[in-house]
Length: 176
Image (tube, rainbow, N blue to C red; front, side):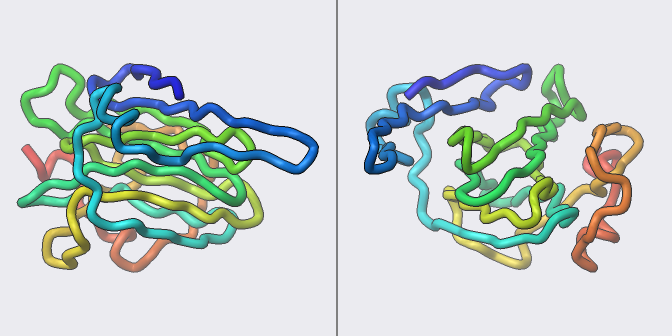
């Protein structure tokens, strides 16, 4: 496995070692000691899986008190995955970075505490898996407006399918 640093401090793009032969392929999608060796110390307590259709956009989500880290990957289809730095004292506060995650590239993204996360589906459908460091709590789940002009994410779709909640998320400046 290879862990690549990104433009945003703490966010890691993980490339697992994929073994293939005429029968198919195999790779370790998670092995705690190997992830700890590259700096991912979270005790992931819950696995989530979502299925979304083309042009669905989920996000930008984060969690408060306690905050939540994520390890995300795609097992079917392809997504445009985005992280936004929401650490108020960070030199990259409000900056974003995107990644293409797909079933065919096997990439995983580590989203540490202090980042909002979202994705939009580029393929006909996508199955998205994510490990989280805190269990779900509706009261603690928060969001930022997906098309906040202060962030300026260059989404590859202009008219996404959104949840009612994501349509009314506040802008980033509400965090200041």
